[in-house]
Length: 79
Image (cartoon, rainbow, N blue to C red; front, side, top):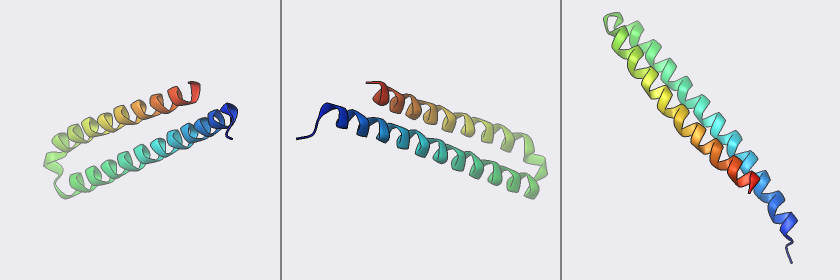
């Protein structure tokens, strides 16, 4: 029979792994945005402002999703 302490321990382990995966995924996503923005600016310097603005918005959206995922995993760890 599985005890409550074991289940909570596994939930906290899963929450920690989930938060780590979320941070890794967000870092990879923002890195790809930065690389693509730099390449786009290098190919078409006159569009630098539009590319930069779009990449900042996309990075902010990724950060928002990552923050939401981390909060969810922390709530799992606490509960």
